[in-house]
Image (tube, rainbow, N blue to C red; front, side, top):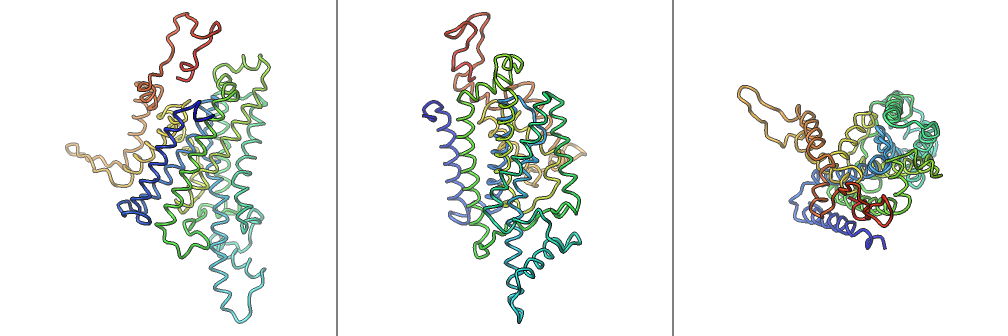
Length: 407
């Protein structure tokens, strides 16, 4: 049984459930009202970022593939669900307006009205081909997984079959992300250019439901997705597949000589990680309310890598800890909640200095806690790197004990 073999998983799921219940009971919709709706949305978005960090840890911490373009998949998931949210909501508004006309509107007139409302801001009145399925929620949910998954599959197939590794692969993922963002910035790309998709917090058919209720429901969805991500990642990394990708991370050449299809394993974990990121993005942007191409610029993916490194890569819970800690601290410092620091004749405004503080924190973690913040939990649980000193620690020569191998 998965939980029996990984008892830490039960602890993580219990903490997540307790957190979700506590926030619900403190919300304006279902509880005491101690937490404002904006705070509930912030916590829900933080859980989505934690899921994206978990996906990043799968591909970097376990497979050794440093992707600096994973936020592109995150944003694509947001764009796919954003199309339906914006189309369906606009259809409701246009439908009510045209219904008041003496002659009922035809489907073509309704479609033209929707296109004009959505794309009038970029000087167009036509619905692009990329919005052909925007009126169907099931179709867009499929696209949430299909579009990022196919992009990752195609990119990974080209890169891995050419045996591009290390920093060269990282640069390629950055180039892919930048090219995609620059394409989306164009008005004729069909995604409203720099304006992006807005009003995503207005859920179609739920105009009568207050935002406080919607925020809690998205919090539940985000927590459920993160729990599923925990289960999936633990199942993958705890079996033979996980052993192979860790071996690829440590010595790819040796694994290839042993007869394993290295490129297939790398492509599988890269594509799966991209799809998990897309699910996180599909839950994040309805809570944020807006998405534009700036969300997938390379700097966003670099931040994602920093979160994983701070939390501790190669640890599922480490990536989650890093994402939650940095995301909440970022919101506190940049949201005006942190008091300014007066140093003689100079005042430190944290909004301007937050990135410097994040960089210093990253350097400090790298120097003093190289295995990330999760190593504190490892130390408490008694997990250590084996001090072999030439001794065999397993049943076979050169093997490690299971508990030490997991440390």
